[in-house]
Length: 402
Image 1 (cartoon, rainbow, N blue to C red):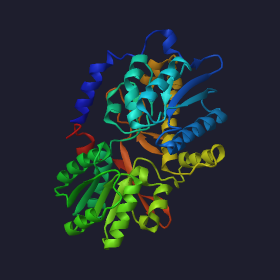
Image 2: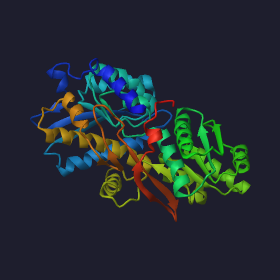
Image 3: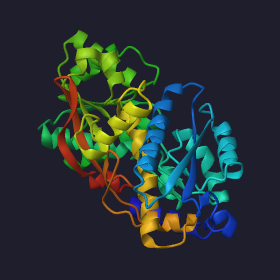
């Protein structure tokens, strides 16, 4: 089971990766006299995905808002960000610069899956906590000083399939999956929950991330008699599949991952997005929950040219995770050290963190996000149609690759 594997991995490295390496390093980035804590992140201002800057802008907006509010017992956050071009090798160099030149206390909301994975060995060596890496990798769950919000895509796919079966009453469910770690993770969770439901997949079809024509895939879907199709790929893939289904007159319920529940997908798919479901660890950006309202207001104030969407809410929520953990550290009365930040983070229980709900960490389990809701695009808006519920146990507690 996943819990057992995680605990073994964590216990095996705790002793080797203890954070304290002396008082100076432990307190780096903390100005006790002026009550300022310096944190940082690497982010792709240049390179193949410069639009990911929206994530960092939202994180910056979060810290600006908190600093102005003065609500963290008078403490303020100095947030230092540097461009890594979304190049893992540069990310390591940037992380080293943030630690050794800028003296950061922790990494907060650094951007990218591959980039964060590349930085992990250095972060462990330097004893720097990584709070809210914006990426999805099972490796993030296995390092004692890393605290991720993003879930495994297999958990999301399992939630979507379970809702299709039990919420919509559909028995013929198909999966279209991107042939990389994103899609393979989704397939693992999908297969596990389908077996648990006593159902055979109507179809399970891989595709390349660069696929622009889904005509052949949709013909197979049509021949399978599927009532629901889960697509785990990019928003461009989703739009292309919806267009192919429309041309062929295939009428099914569609599900897609959280990051496609975004205005950028609407630009690509248009009216074809109507009715599409999204299994999401984040509330819809239109939510009237105070944390999401604050996101919309802060981005409008500090970065008025940025779109309001799920990418921004993702960055915002990962920044909120550091704030929540730091407040727990202050409340504990313990000395402000990296060790004690990790200790405090491990006490977070069922917390609302930005657009996420039910966030929980312990020393034995760093799978922070444990619940998802179901969002649907209907009547021109992304709305929550099923409240947050725990991930299906069969997928959430499965060993990786199971």
